[in-house]
Length: 341
Image (cartoon, rainbow, N blue to C red; front, side, top):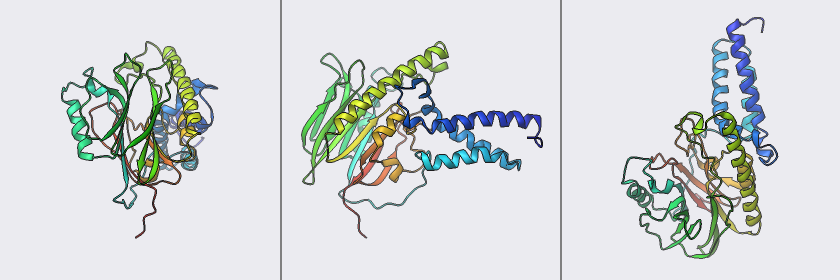
C-alpha cells in the first residue's frame, strides 16, 4: 500500500469491501433465509458484485499494481463454487424428437396496461405460435386477457374460485395427471402436470415463487426507506424458503423424468435455487450462451429457470429479447436419448 497514491488507497478500500461482499455471497446457497433472511438480499446483487470486481481487476492491471490479486482470487474461487454468470456459446446437436419447452412470466398479458400497447396479448400469441413449443408453462396467467393457444391439452389453475390470476401448463401431449401445491398466504403457487411422451411419463412442474415486489423503476424500489425495504425483502425470502421446502417434499415422491421450470423470483446464487437445482441440470448452464438474462432490468438478472433430471440431455437453451412483459421468455430443447453422429 506504500507505493500507491492516496486516491488509489481509497479505491482499494472500496475494492476490498465489495470483494468481501462477493466472497460472503458464496455461502448464501447454504444458508436458509429462515435462518438469516437479512443476509439473503446479497443473492440479488451477486451479478453486480461480479461485474464490479472484474472492473477492479482491469483497473489494477492497467495501473500495473498487485492489488489486482484481491478481486482476481475471489473471482477465480467463484468460478469453481458458483454457477456461471456468463456462458460462451457451445455447439450442440439438436434431435428431431427433442422436447421443446418455453417458460414465460407473461405479467397477466399486460392486463393493467403497464406497457402502453393493447396488442400485447396478440404479440405473445404470435411469439408462441412462431416458436411452436411442445410444452408451454406460463406464470402470472390472466384468464380475462388470455389469447387462444394451439395446444391439444392444458392445465390452468387460478389461485382460487374468485381469482383471475394463476398458472398454466399447455401441452401437445396428453396430460394424464395434474395437481396444485396450493401455497397459502400468497398470490403465488406451484402446479404440475404429468404428460405422456414417447411411451414415457414426464412430470412438468411450473413454479412461481414468492414475489419480492420490487419496483425497479422507482427510487429505493418503491419503498419509503431502506429499513422498510429490507423488512419486506426479509419477509419475501422467508416465504420463498417455506415454498421451496413444500416443493421439495412434493418432488421427493416423484422418481421419474421431470422438468422444473418457472419464475423463482431469485437468482442462481440463492439458497432457493441451490435447493431446487440439486441433482438436476440447469438448461442455461448446460447449453446457454451470454448472460441468459430473464428479467428486464439494467443488469443481468437470471431469475427464470428450466431444470431437468440428471438423465436428461439439454441440446439448446435460449433467452429471448421479447419485451412484452417484465420477464423474457426462455426455451430449452430436451431429450433423454444420447445423440450419435
